[in-house]
Image (cartoon, rainbow, N blue to C red; front, side, top):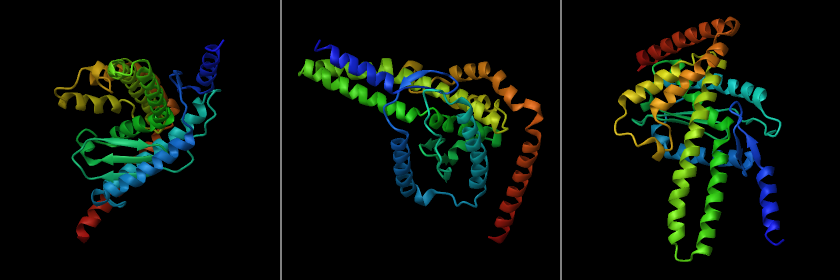
Length: 293
């Protein structure tokens, strides 16, 4: 009877905060609120602006203009995606805050989106990103993490692991059990879940790119370039990310569904003409700025 109370309580809490990932329909436990996630994202954004202040490109830089143009299209696609795929047990509204765009001059090849839609792009990424379709593939992947609330899921998992680690210390004050539990939990639970989240972001990201009228095949091109250059990568089961080969193989499976979205009723022809014009205008503006210097 005494044990029944925590068991029933635990079952209630588990079901109370069970949510479904859009598109993939994977069910997972999230105890954080979307408000907390947005506040955390805002705080991290302010801290990173201070950190990268000297290396941040101005808004009128050609790279900044391109990132903003592509990012806004991906954001609008994310809004549409959320409205289409929100499950009945997840009535969390899509982040209402408009996106921010920060391009940082660095050799690091990376991009990420913080909760509440703060988008960062490191210029080292352009070693692998050659055009707007490629950039959309990367930004779609990162925005997908926000749509799937992966930050909240990871934070919730960390709380559970911390509580269980404390429990092992109560059972074994010597710490031997805790020393075994923590790395085991990381290897068998946290790392596999992180790889699942990355694949979910790949798939949702390809959908976002296609919905925004960018070629979803670009995702495969970007990761193939990364795979060609990567050396001494860690074994997949010890990494937070799937291997590039695994990701590329899955992208081949998802390509038909995303290609269908991309080519639906010729809806992207006009949009892609606008993209070409925007690139031309951006190049002209960049050339004009160079002449003034």
